[in-house]
Image 1 (tube, one colour):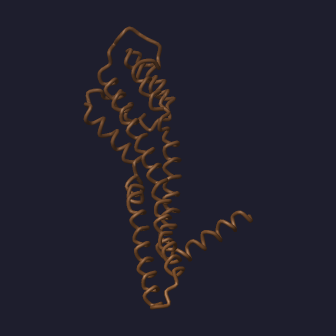
Image 2 (cartoon, helix red, strand yellow):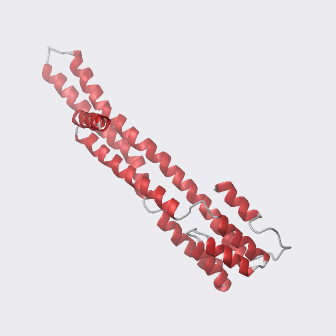
Image 3 (cartoon, rainbow, N blue to C red):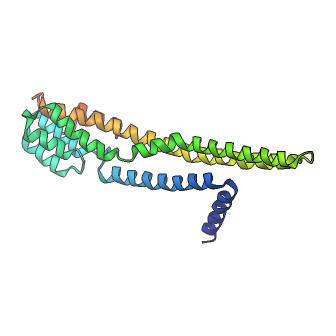
Length: 224
């Protein structure tokens, strides 16, 4: 409890020192943290990167074992199950229709990406804006002092002004890292989805091999 009170007191002091720009940046940081936690939960709930059963279903379909493919697909928790199920139910539907269905699933997972991107780009600019305002105020104080110039007045105004830039960077850098990780995961998901769709639409009918092996599993292992 004492640690929490200490953190709150420190944040309150920073907000008072930095002014309204720092308060805005702190609010943005809270919003960004909430969105990031939600996205991680959404990815986990949608089984992003966890496609073992789905890969087994696609591999079995590729071998011509329709019953095993359906059984494996029923065990999968992946958000791609409806897309693969549609491909297996109506292979004549065409790759374009299935890819559109996959993109609809991707769009749900990518909700919030634009907000994170905006924060990563605008937080440093907002911090710089606060610094400029602080520098203007510091030089106004220096001018008002006239001939009785105290270097500490200028130095104090400068460090307070630079505080907003520091806070802006603190908000922007983790946001950029989180967004980069999320986008990398979605790129991997697109590769896996495209491979699954094309495999179901154009099965090789090769000599049966162990379910779960093959190029599709390699893609899942590489990105999972």
